[in-house]
Image (cartoon, rainbow, N blue to C red):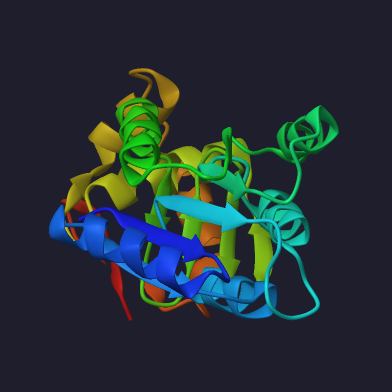
Length: 219
């Protein structure tokens, strides 16, 4: 199920969008303030963010987008704003990192077209677990708003284990995936040891299955 975060202080408009996409099978959260949007983003993983510029509270939509882009360069952000027709605002929105800038009034059908286009092109690079998020493109683990940097090989190994979550992955398969056919058992063991230290406090563990391989699972 795709998940959408609506950050919009026009409650009627937000409700209309939420109802429409819920009928389409999406899971939708609606927030009206920038502060609450950041808090919710840090605790949940969304596939798309619909973001107004003028929000309740002290933090506007632009600041919300900047905060998100400092953590995640991949999640689609669609600005929706009727505050100004100035090209400067549109340019600033794209400089911040939005994927689209829709000027109100905008129809729900137009929003849906843009979301569908984004979903068709989005590749799997972010994995959500109970206590953390693994962003493979950015090579980071995110937990409680803090980032844990990973090396390239750590990222490749963890990504392969995440793709096969709670499944036993043979050592040879990981070596082939990460080192292109070369069986690097000692190197793999060092990577696993390093990953274990980094995921230990994030609700995950890598279990050794004797004579078989490794399994990524919850603590």
